[in-house]
Image 1: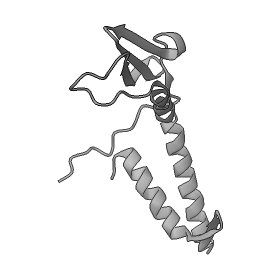
Image 2: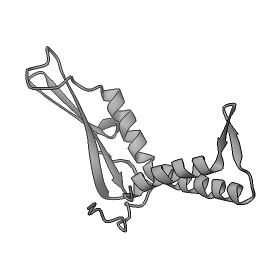
Image 3: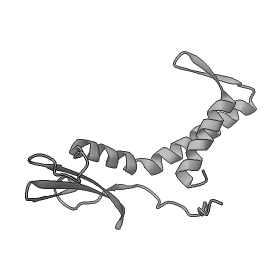
Length: 134
């Protein structure tokens, strides 16, 4: 049985990168190994970090392919947006529910008609994943 506690709430936003160095990142170099860390926080609370690394020469055995520092920053930006994205999903879900209640059975998106019930199911699934209910 799933033991997740779905009553636990996430740290409220806004989230941001935490100032740890230039560009709110930390770079560490040693023996051809460069680590790049982006720290995520809310107020004075450190929530986590995204790490990327690369080597100035060939990648040593035992390491997976080095990660891209710009992708690392993009991942951090997406994580920072999470509270706002969740709020927007909840608003969109409420809008779709109202549309369904008013007998608007389909909504057009990119030239494709889609059932409001399908939209609601998709939004519910994403919200459940974000809140730990999935």
